[in-house]
Length: 167
Image 1 (cartoon, rainbow, N blue to C red):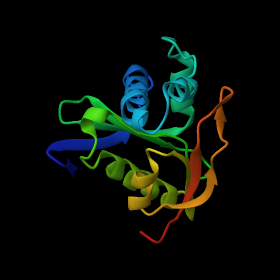
Image 2: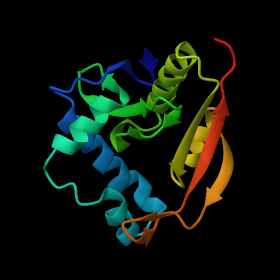
Image 3: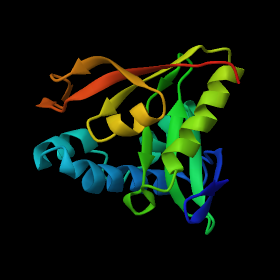
């Protein structure tokens, strides 16, 4: 798949190799990209206390239908997942790969997966940072959530939904 000025391929999460790389993308996206919309306190609450133990992180990615975006070099540059009820629980792109179509490629793959499962709608809880990306890809705000909390800290987001048309 051509994405901007580099090749990006979308494939399944590999529980034996991808936990560290996806966790690094998650942290970088929140610390660097989302920092323009959230305070340091909100960022730390959002990140939580995961530390260096990737066991829980890897187990969660393996339980979800997680898809990984890889640059032509093989490096993980983004990931997303799709829960059985149509929730896109995570969509994160490394800041160095932003603006190159990685999020679009990931959500296109998720939408295809959802259609194959017979789902008619996708939904997500998008950060203030991610809302414009989801809107460009067909999602609309269903409910603003200004009082959303993470670990006792208000971290506003919005519930967004996207109706899936036929393939």
